[in-house]
Length: 210
Image 1: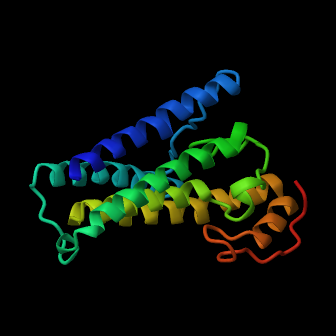
Image 2 (image 1 turned 180 degrees about the vertical axis):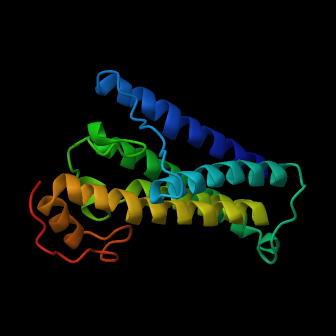
């Protein structure tokens, strides 16, 4: 089970970052979609990027340690035979959701934020019920892998990912989108939940159009 989870994790990283970047480059005229990492120390973007990298590294480490039997399983999850299978299924659903959500962004897909850049505001499809379906699906994926290989390192990876996404969304992307799209994003954010439908909607404050 741990080896299967590890393979899914590695394939997921390759597809969601490597293959997605290659596809984006093809449809966006050579743009791979990656933006430069934050340079200002201790800014929200810096903390978000640091936490995200920590989550990726810990996620790989936790699965490796679980595969080779180095990290002990968390009790009582290891005593329920159905839990690892449920976790693997959840991880697979999250992986598919991540890929589909990335594709739904079309040419607007990016990793990172470039302040001077203006992309199309995507509001249709899965973005009609969640403002951040990619991030939500990533959390589901790692939560599933944590259930499949329940050890303390894997749990730490999940915590780091949730923290990274919260910081990135609240401290970086939402302020940027409000500056970039003004009233259009304010209206969208007042109707659609941050991650889960109806939860985390922003109050509409009549932001002026950019």
